[in-house]
Amino acid sequence: MWAKVARGLSAGRVQSVAVRLIVEREREIRAFIPEEFWDVHADLASPEGGASAFCPGSSGWQGL
Image (tube, rainbow, N blue to C red):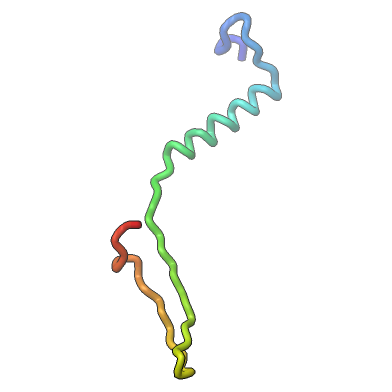
């Protein structure tokens, strides 16, 4: 381990594991590719008492 760490730097057993976990998480964050996802559901009732359903797809929406 000391061959990979510059003199004067701290590199204990616990610190090495903690840094590794942080680096792995940061790599996951940078590799993340966001996707647009919409899931809208509504149960509506008309004034006449009839019920209707409303479930639009995401393709019908133009930005927000």
